[in-house]
Image 1: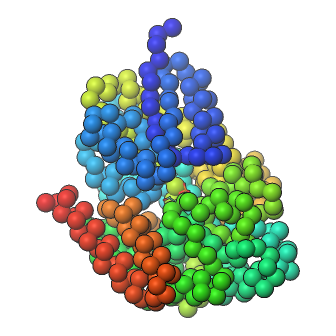
Image 2 (image 1 turned 90 degrees about the vertical axis):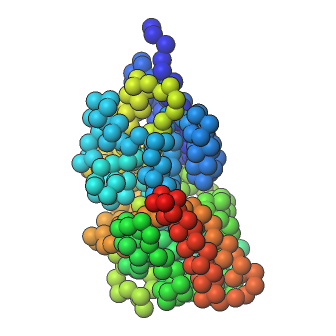
Image 3 (image 1 turned 135 degrees about the vertical axis):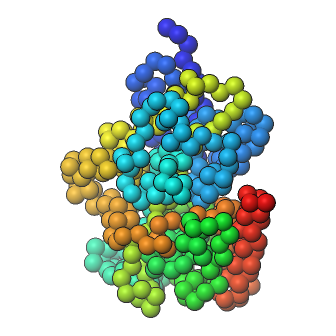
Length: 422
Ligand SMILES: O=P(O)(O)OC[C@H](O)CO
């Protein structure tokens, strides 16, 4: 037959997630004869983003790039580099319907006028993960030990430490995603003015405020007491929990697939803990993970873009969307995908897999729990991580770390605002 059109796809899915993505791509490739999607692992999320931007400047951007949550504002501002999904649908005639996606996902990846920029794919949220074997060793019943509030978590951590049940009572992956961005959402705390950045070009960060001080202060105090161990930036710490060395971690719902594949201990997840002094009853968390962006390049043809659009439509079909979510721990991004999982009885048969969706939908999103839309956000995450690390190393209070993080991060936002508005 005719030669297939290659569609390069750059991604950040390692380990079990990489295998699952490979399988999904292969099923698309054999479902039709025209296009051959070619997945390439390009490293971590920030590495994929950097590589994609560099490649675009060199006229060699992949047809599809997987960009993480916090790269969204930068991508939406990238102008000629990307083809927004609504435009892709229009020019190729491939029907990609925004109404198919659950509101939290659609809202996150839309422009201000509601038109979709990216194709939703791997949406997660952050949850609290429990090593049940460690709990049992510490004399804690993993099914009944209260873990709703931070005081509850501290109590459990003290028991784990006292019994020497694990070298690390509590740790975290994604320090800033979980303990700043998701923390702010579930406590209905403002992260930045102008509706967390959705409402205008030059928001002011709110990192140097009492709620953030309370939360970072709690973590720094736990660190001093030997209850919490800061283990590194972004997703790098995750394998420490996989290896069984920690009693509790905070991580993406999407570590489910990896744990199912490789963990030698019983595990489960539950809701993120909250501070009753900040909110009586925590609200919805926000989506994380990543989405697929259609990239431009010199010489890219309508046929190439049609292949991209066909792939986007394929992954949104209820069967494929649900299959990916069940294997990985990501949430199904379409309404039909979610209904399919529910109907199959998957959540009931696999306790804990329902927590992400429940936490994402437990309230109506407010202006502080819909997402954070700030330019330069990947850089801001690194700044906050640096200041957190400095506070641990120098034994300085949360207030100092937050003042520094606020000052340095605001400069990033102001620079971004100048770059797009002159
Ligand atoms: O591990 P993921 O894919 O759920 O992503 C976690 C964070 O949202 C990445 O920024």
